[in-house]
Length: 512
Ligand code: AHR
Image 1: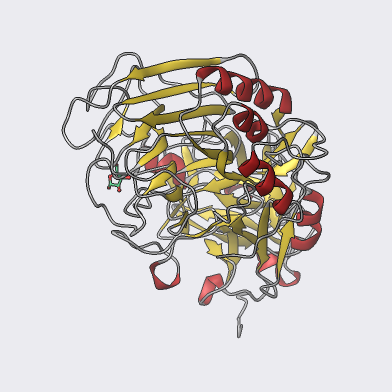
Image 2: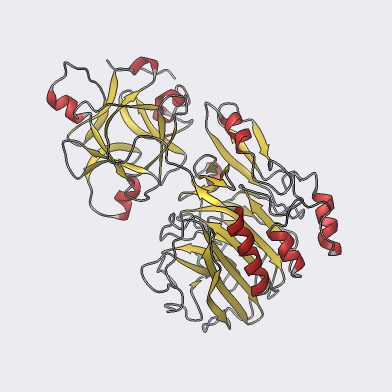
């Protein structure tokens, strides 16, 4: 039976004054519970002038807000602070605030006390997909991890997502020296432009070579690239991702994909470097350390001092990646200082969380949980995907059509894909936001479209499945058809019943 439907941010920091005073006087912050990356940079004479993290405090004394979330149900916002000064984010506070609805990360606060907060990136050379050409905000629950055994969330950037601050304080301009590091998910990347963290144009426009100095991570070969098939840590210097001194290939820059990846770029007059390492253990390797690129426009640099996350300098919004923490410094940090920061990072204890939902390799059926539809299961008829009523008296064909093998995500093994029980090699995938059953063509696009990341069910039942490449959208039934749906909008994006419509119970397979 068909169902019808009528249906400059605030300074967050209690301790900021202490920290700012400490930074400007060179004194150590008072009563630091522990030493964190920005304490190490300050000791090295290259203090942080921006410090961003949704997972932990980057100063031992920092107890202020790390980030802000906004929930969809009533548009209320909440700041998330560390559990204790210098500690890991209070993810439980976010979970409680966001229970039964969806949340986005609205502000990533600057812990340095300089007010260099990251907010929704505005349109520039390219428009974002959100209202007014702004970029999307990140889904607040899309990148769960633990840090030192405590749950925390990173910033999951699917294409269209971006953060920026075009009016900063203390960030390098011109040819001034600076350093930066970031921790990324080395398994989440693409070849789109440009998953960056760092220094960019204050106009959101491409103003020419040398107007950026940001860390890039991904497998773009459109500009520079390194050994292997990628992904690579490179420097986005504007109109070029540089893996070394040459504009194209540099053999010294290896493919690197640690699940937790420390990535570093630093630059000073006619000198720059790329370094990286495993954020869970070991030290840093230097992939490049030398003069500016051997093409014109990058010496001297013309840095402008904006800060970007997840996008290119001109608001290119095609990139994907996950960010956990990152800082920018005043001055060119020594390798020794960065090595100490890396030791701090590995000691912090980043770890993955177990994937919720049905086990890879199992056969399941997926039952709707909305009150209208609890006898309906995700099923297919040829390439058409819908929900259909299935019972023990259904035909063998109907039972098999409603049975799915859970496969490791075609685009990322942290997520899953659903292969048809009776059409081997065909998977649930979205196209123009609707679900279809299509044969895997082996393309990156198909892999992305067929990958869904399970979370606890938004309505408290079963699981909800986030689209890997449209991370504000979830697998949803609407008038018995299947979509990836945003939480709010017209027709299948309607907020009415969204928490129920995106929640699915895995049952025993109708066809074992
Ligand atoms: O340098 C690579 C990219 O080129 C920049 O991020 C962007 O501004 C331009 O499109």
